[in-house]
Image (cartoon, helix red, strand yellow):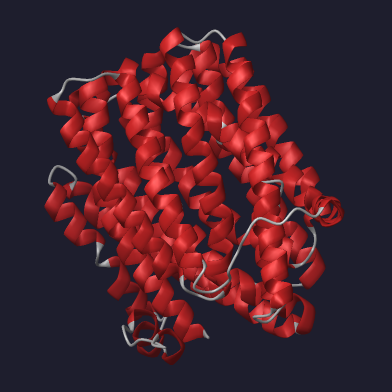
Length: 476
């Protein structure tokens, strides 16, 4: 099982590297062609719709992963997956229609409102794709999701290159995203049927039961959304589109990087859910192992991004977006915290503690929204970035306190301190070299052999993690 997780993680990491390069090219085209103002409008469109898409989740994604992880490949499994898929479809269609009506009440320019109408189709496809990822997660076949992601991003990039030759505007760029997502959703649905043949099933009795069970997850998700994405929407309402463009350029880096812990914890989640019921000892063991892995990568990425923010922003948007560099430095602390937040949030759901966690997310939402209302008018995107960090500190610390209270988990403090030491040493070595992207990046890689030398992980751990040998179950 652990080998399958390592294999999926390796493939997913490789695909994220490819997608990261493609995303960099896509964002580079958008920022350079649209400029800060146009890119700000583009970002506002998708940030606004993201709120409604996330609400439409209703906690169903995590609920489905938990439910099908507790069943074997059987008619019950197919029935559960099909009903949850249908419920998600109904929810996202209703909420996106609501979003399309409400956008005309907001002080957005007409082009943004029309863009929201067009991008609505993307939101529906994206929401349905996301719920189906739970199927791949259970069967540890996320490499198929990675393939669909890469192909869709290639389609988007190719379409943008063609589009630029015709000198079309913002709405055509939005339409390209819709086109790419249509292909992505089709691939995800087709691949998912290799494992579970999902089809729409209307069952209002089951829908009521599922919503009642998943409601605490849904409420927590909405509250997470408030501090994770609403800052962009608030910025778009309270400040010019140019400010939104600057903030969004930095935020794109955060979104790209935090996908890695989401992939890893997604693979670990079925184990956490199973062990939370069957063996608390195995749950603690799995949690501690995941915590150590998260620590290694959280410190590496946050340190690297903090020191190399100028280079990263220049690659994304060019000279017009250099104001995003200090914003990215602030968000690098949020990236560090979000790595652990992914683990804590999923562990809480596995332990069925989401009702208690609702109060944690509510506190984080109040902190984020309250500070943004007070500070954005004066400090703009710096306020949005700083409040994101403060909310993450509160939520992550509170989640781990809740987990500790219910499981008595004690992390390996020596490994944690050694990882911090390795990160600090590498950061000091990189600092004099940040004038050279290549030199500083090469030196940053010394972090991993340094961890090995300090005994944070062994050669056996390394061989298991990077092994490219295909697990027997995946070769059939």
